[in-house]
Structure formats: structure tokens, C-alpha cells
Length: 420
Image 1 (tube, one colour):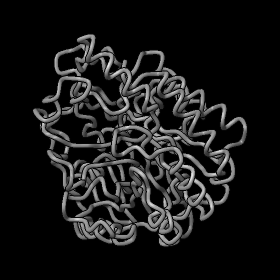
Image 2 (spheres, helix red, strand yellow):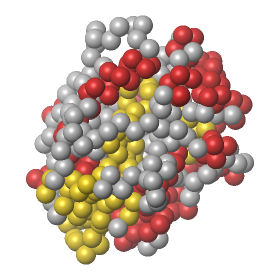
Image 3 (cartoon, one colour):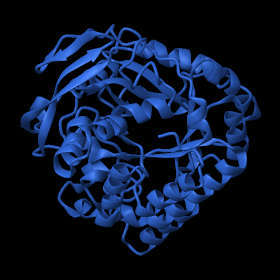
């Protein structure tokens, strides 16, 4: 038995993203079967239907709209990162304090991807305001100049096939971007959570910052712990892709070592569920679809890779799959700990169960799984949400009205130094 699984950066229930299959019910049902009791999804411009969001909506109005999508349609509890995109207006920056006070706590930004990219001057202002009011930044960090230069270069050279994604979203890009974000964070005294670390250089940058007692945290997606850029070359190989790109075996090993040794803190999914034909429609470095349906497989894959294969102590496993995320993102102590007053969220993993993953056994709306044929040793057999059994022995016992929004506040220790 471990403390509940908590998964960050899930994108299943995003009505503005074309081709997404999983609404909140399907997504949180899959999460529950995978031993997850709380998902952290997104609110903000990125995930709303074009034309349906008035341009002057406040952060809190956007949050209310997003909560309404989940209300009575979620088997698990839920929270949201708020996405800030482009040249963040002073009026939006002025809303951050109220949003943090109301329990948003974390703000997602990108340093690449055209209109999503927040310029560094605007980041400076955002970081300072978030730090001032006790929030944390969730950062997708790639060097935009490197990404664009390599995109243009490979197109010019006729090497723009999807199997070369790792040459665009490359190790140098991650190294430069992570270090620039860390420097800006040190200047503004904001805490940083690097989402989907992919390269050994990223792990090293995080480790060095943490050695200086800077509050910097990093996650790894479980597909990065198994696959590498060599898998892109296989038939249908870009199905394993999530942005930034998969890299080399040495990078995969560095991520595993980071989770084992403490330089990385959490495992996550970046879950994004589409039909296989949508996933594989794009076959160039500009058109390959990111994301995959991994919210149900994260916990058993991590248990197999760390506890079974590498003898990770169970307290550390609970930390990288639950407690650390709860602390970093401000869900603790309501979530992430077994203690008086905390939510009675639990998952039971039976280490005697050996299960070869098959699409027919999973519970999202997807018609493929990159984990088909992967053998898990140890599997969730019971998931309990606030004292209520919602999954038991492969049977759904919960209701889509069970899930509640969780108001968050990041602890002062997490904001001041590497607390986990």
C-alpha cells in the first residue's frame, strides 16, 4: 500500500484540442484504474474552444469555466496549472496574486512554440510576481532559436522526417534553456518546476541549481524512461513521441539515475489522447503529434522499472509518484501523506501480479497504446479516494461525481530551497 498516486500535467480533458478523445470522465476513469486519485490538468487560453473565450476573461473566470467542465464528470480529484502564453499583458500579470490566493498555485509557460512562447522580458515580470505571492512556475524549457534554426536546417537539407525530431528538440536546446530559466529564477527568487526533462544536460542543470540550494524541481515522463530516439525509426515509431523529443540511451539512463538519486523529483505523463491515425498523421519534424495516453500506465510502469528492476525503497517510490508532486504543487498535506486530517487517498499495488499490458485492458478512449506488450510486475488492484473505494480488482466502483477541485498552496519550504 502506498499513498495515492498523483499525476501532473495531464491533458486529457481539453475541449479545444482537435482530435482529443478523452473527456474528463474517460480520462479520470483511466487515472483511477492506474492508481491515481488526483490529476493536475490545465486552464488558460490553450485549452479552450476557439472563439468561445472573451479576450478580457480574467484568470479566475477562466478557472471557473474549466472547473465547470470537470464538475460531475470526474472520478478523481483535480486541479489546474494556469497557462500563460505569448507576451503576457500587464493586466494578466496583475491577476496573478488573486489567482494564487484563490488556490491556483502553479503557472505553466513555454519558451518555444511560436505564439505560446513567453519572451524573457515578460518572463522576468511573471516570475517576479509569482515569487512575490507564493506561487511556482511550471516550465517547458527549450531554446527557441536552436529549435527554429534546426527546423530550417533539416528542411533545407531534406532531413525533415519525423525520425529526426531529436535533432530539432536537442540536448543543446535543453541545456541552454534550462540554465537561462534557472538564472532568471535565481534573480527573481521564484521556484521552478521543469516539466518533462528529457536530456542528461537538463538533469545536470537541475542538480547544479539544487546544490546551490535553489528551489528547482524536475520531472520525467515514464515514456522517456523506456524509449529513445532510436524508436522513432521503427514503423509507426513517432507514436512514442512527446515534446520535447526523446533523446539517446544516455539521456534515458540519466533520467532514471536522477529519479533514483534525487536530482529529479517526480514522474508524470503529459497525457494527450488521440486516435492512432491522428497520432501518426504527421510524419515530419513540424507535423508529428505529441503526447500519448499514459495516465493509466504510469504507476505500474514506474513500479516495475524502479522497485522491481532497481530495488528502489518503497518510501522513495511513493515520493516520486505522489508525495513530491503534492508538496511541489501545493496539494500537501491534504494529498501526498497518510496523516490525521489528510484525505484518505490510497492505492494498493499487488507485487505478485504480473500483467502484460494490452489495449483491451486499459480504460481511456484511445485505440492504441505505446505500452502494448510491456510486462508490469506489480499492479494497482485498489484505488481509494477520500476513503471511498473507486476501483477494486479491475472493477469500477466510483462515480463521475466523486471528483472535487483541490485548492492549492505551496509550502514556504518548497519555495525557499530544494525541499524534496
